[in-house]
Length: 240
Image 1 (cartoon, rainbow, N blue to C red):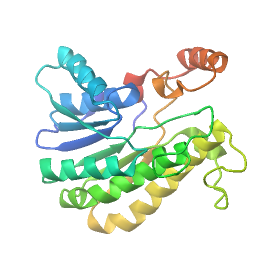
Image 2 (cartoon, one colour):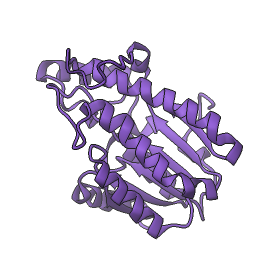
Image 3 (cartoon, rainbow, N blue to C red):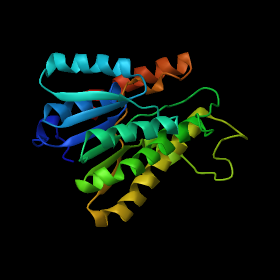
Image 4 (spheres, helix red, strand yellow):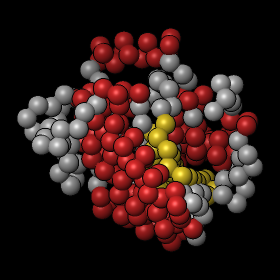
């Protein structure tokens, strides 16, 4: 991407269909908005559909003619992932862009997903892994693109296959970094396997932005982190 690239450089997306997980806030919000402003039919997956609807109302205040809707999606519950995928299969004939954006960060105490996985790994990686697999037939129809949002901190992650649930030692950022490393490994291997079918899979670091993903951090750490992000980071509308 050119250093001076802006959303105005997006092509005409009329007739295209895009799915954005976590499109109701942060980087996902502006990603969904810009795709819709350029003509794409956008479906947001949101853990809280009410917040999703509120976000759409806000989007339409600046772009009233966009085609954007929200469906419930909790990536920490594989039943919800399957339900969302079933809904999408019933709504569209093909997918041009899937953006795996939603996630959790720095959950202060060890928590498990509905299916018993460590929360970061289960939500950020396994939830999107399952969703991508379920939507792959629709993506293949349109020779679509899969964009998985990772983070630069993935370079500090490790994969201990003997303790993926972090039973022995839980550290919030270690869990997050592990999940972001998993995102990259998944995206690269998927691209290797799926490119012969006309599918492109990439992982991206959108920049460090002051969004709600760090809401679980301890109060002092959170305040300091937000200050640093405001000074040195990238606003969410530019990260997208």
